[in-house]
Length: 432
Image (cartoon, rainbow, N blue to C red; front, side, top):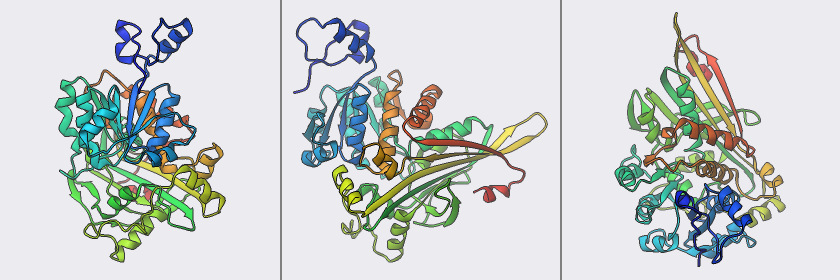
């Protein structure tokens, strides 16, 4: 049974703190409630690698958090035996089950597979709660997020749905928007991601379902102001990531940034490519004909996500040595001057903590889960309750976007920016 809400005053009902108090609260208790006036009651669906870490981060922010998962025992292993965060059994396909589990929440977070976005969106509307997810599924339309179909319904309920609020998509969208605001005209956007694991055995930083979906989906690109589907693992290029990564092969990937950024930022071209040994392995299996939607997911090639305890064991055994995750965003456009237009390339590089660095913090999780959970936590920390409707990261108010990026930097994430004047159009290829 969850604690009952205590309403402090008429103006603070929407941000009411939670406590099990029948008598009049003491001054100390009252001070705590006032201090955490922006805290929320948050239900997280999916307590895997990302959802469990996000739950801990939100609890530290002062929110009241509880989780739902189809396998509470597995969820408890991710949360840790010492965690007091409640977990209840929930089937993400069952709307009534979600409604029962999330009753009383102010924010519903879908940290499970994006295929459940719409059912969780409907649950949030029924609960009159806000909503947040980490990615889109894009099955109805490969270039239009399914969450946008609920725009009017969230406006009518005076609630907000933040979509794609993770690391990539999410933080990458914010960095593209930041660069676009420095230009008068955007010509092209290039997003490059890097994922690698130094391991003797195949260990994926994503869930097996997400990795498999990435491998069998056609990449979405935006060329000459038109959406297109490209060939899987195509357009191989050598990209220069920041050290210690350096140059790495990258290929087109099915990423969600392409589905929203051109709608909010006028541009000519946009593509997303991924590199690293994990994606190289998927590319090799694709060439060998071992990946197809009809055959389904080959479990031996897509192992289950490792729990923190399992990761600790793999590190002790020397099977897992290190893992990395990085992102680079390049926006090329024009800044208008009095005498002439100046072509510019604005580059933002993001280096997330490596597995070794995360380990030194006393945590056992992958860099991808660490990055996604910490960025999502910042979206929630600076949540704007006055917004209504469905929002992609780049559509958020300027102050909120800046606060999120600044907050991410405080969690060991290195973000650097560089502006380079371009003399000729040909330099775009050289710069990449």
